[in-house]
Image (tube, rainbow, N blue to C red; front, side, top):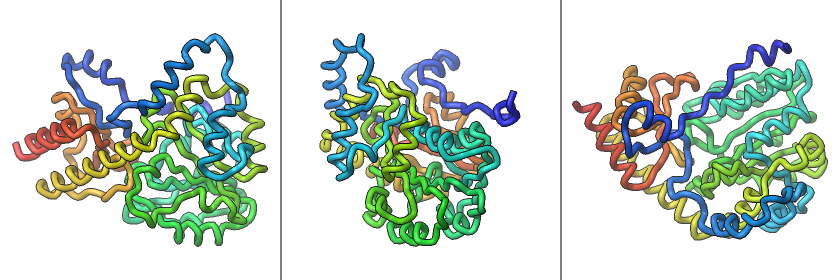
Length: 359
């Protein structure tokens, strides 16, 4: 077995609510751990899927024409510059397969999305991690870390797990200074929740001399996490390479029609954003009352420092039917990450956290 595979630690996703309820003997649990959309899926997407059910005996459109056409119109790009993925995770896999050879390097922040390191390792490369600075991507340090064998630089904006974001001006400066032969990958899974107008918007930089791939997903703001549908916007030559390593039917009929319908559901998108923004304000107020430090977020979650008892507090919340994300795997053992839920779910979390810490 290849050593890079033998030493790989599998990604450990959060357990479904139903499984946790069975294990703990509880009911009515709420999940504030996986950054999902608490409103559910886009209603227009649900309607489109219902109409498509009769065609499930057919293979999906391998080119994803309808969804790529909708995305092309949204972003003002030819379809040839758009690549669909089984979630944006698969786009990361395409990039590693296309651009990483054994011994090559990729860069990312630390802590960051765990799948960067795993998929780079599968391709035989090594991921060099650059620590966050004040919970923000340190773009200057990432620039300095570029080496002759650096092929990919992953920038997630807004960042997971901190929820911070850099500006368009900062991205422009980073791209201006990136040497030839390096592909910059901008992961914008949470971009729809960014309330600050200064936050960089990747599609605006696709014409830069430094090649840029922008990854987005329907999992978060459109509530389609269970369908696994994401996409990349890329320079024509890069997109062509990604299509060469892509499986011919990598996105399903339902995912394609749901994505196209969700893209037109502006009312649902705005409702999702407003719910998140209000939920974050409620969390901030709670943390301030409790004297807890937190990182103001441009995403649909917030990172809060509980202290040495963080793991114990997470377990007590779990016993009370509230699932949050412990951050030990992100090297932040004193922190918890809390996803915004429905208003009543947020208030339930606030009440129980207050009771635990003050009791």
